[in-house]
Image (spheres, rainbow, N blue to C red):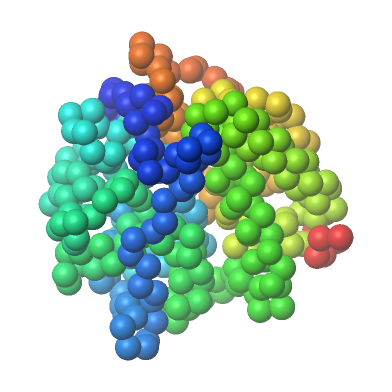
Length: 328
């Protein structure tokens, strides 16, 4: 991990004050740049090599874009710029920094491209961020809906035999499950970790584990969330599960159970991890560095040694559940 900058930012500086309600709840900021991709007037054109996606390997919202691009073959059409996982301390901005100026955009900080796009931008500078290389401006940072754009608007550039991550017969069910996963799990760990009151923390904690218990039951009967087919929902759930034991369990006080204590969720997560699009985009060193050296209070900059990451390669035996088809 010699390339990772040893810097620290206290937990209470990881979010904007505007994201903490009066009763201590974390309320995530909305995305500023939400223009969709498409062929209609005012939409972002679909064009190979026109866009650069700025990401952090540590960030779950960015990670899910990387998985989708790899699964669909769009990583051949969209270039990737990666920031250092540990936030810089030489600025009062809630920023991300590149180890060296980005090789394509020439920027040192994520804020550089945001403020070049909108000098009046307020709020955190977030990944994922899609930059149009013809204008050198951010055109989309819609972390909630980018997955859907890759799946639908960019379909003409999907590789041969790309999976259908959003099959039409399941779309209503996928949307409903995604809403639950986002509110209670993806964002739920942050609502627990960034809460500034005991009541807000405990409510988020209870809802998180209530939903994980329900998903544990669901995955007892189905290899993936919708039978034997990976969908959009699996990507969304995976990015939180893969960070759970290395970051959220202790860093965000989500410590009722580890992922490894849920037999079905744990084997399901390993099943996904052992597939190329998931493994190749999962960087545990970046995840651990970000959450322990910049997203939590850790004044002595001590990076935990555990957990044992070799367990992610252990057998999972999920294939036998494929015969059950769609979840019961």
